[in-house]
Each structure stands twice: as C-alpha cells, then as structure tokens.
Image 1: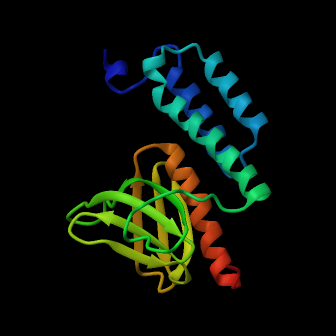
Image 2: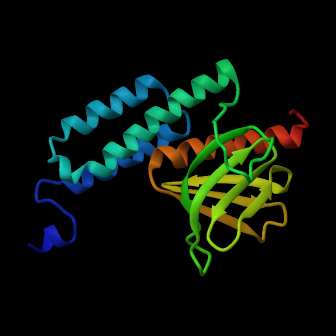
Length: 185
C-alpha cells in the first residue's frame, strides 16, 4: 500500500517510467518520426495499465506534433493560424493555445498568442505583450514555456494545458525570437 501511495509499483514500473521519461526528454531536443515510433514501442512494452501512463501518452503525442511542426517549418515556414482576436490586429498569427501564468499572483489564464512581432497572453485583468526583440532566451520545460527578457531579471512563464502546445510554443518562440534578432521578417 505504501508503494502505491508513493507511486511506485512492486515490479519496478516507476523506475522503468523514469527511464522512458529520460529518453523522451532527450528526444524532445531533436524529435524525429523514428524516435517517436521507438518511444511508443518502448511505452507499450512496459505493459502498464493505461491509467498509469496517460501523461506519457500525452507526452508522446506532443513529441509527435513537435516533429511534424519541425518538418513543416523547414518545408513551408511559419504556420499561419486563423484568428479574429482583436489584439492580433493586422499581424499574422503563428500560434494560439490556452495558457496561464502560474508565477503571477493573480494567475491569469487565457490565450497565448504569437505573432511575428510579439508574444501575447490575453486573459485576466490585462493582456501581457512581449515583443520578440526583448526576448533573450526561450526555455521549454514540461508544459511550461519561459521567455527570458534581455535584462535576465524578468521572465514570463506560460503554462500550457498539454505537452503538445508547450513543445510547439517553445519551438515557435525560439524561431520567432531568432528571426527578430537576425532582422529577418
């Protein structure tokens, strides 16, 4: 009973899942369809009940979507997302997903939107706008995307609802910030 409360299975399921997660994190740095397929096979081979691996299934789906986005970026450039949101105005939207800011005392939630010029969180009492030229670094960790400003003292952490949104947001934010620094439209 104590092992169950701690999330450990008598057959080593926790250790095997930890190893699978390490492989997943490594694959998230350079996702490929073959890696996604191998991770899927590894997860199936654990033979754990689906309710014990539902987060890992979500992680796998996110990795698959990231691999597809990376391929599409290389072939077609930035995606265009149709939105009628007024904060976007005449700008082209490249990303839109539900998100929140867990570090803000009010914990606003709403929609995280990326245009070619800025990242925007619409929701809560006010919209947060962060131009890409002010972003020095982008860190993606689990379901969070962290935008670090050039002053290195201010960060904005956005928590997505699913791994796929966070992984894709991280890739797109790095791409948009890099394009702005290089002066490319």
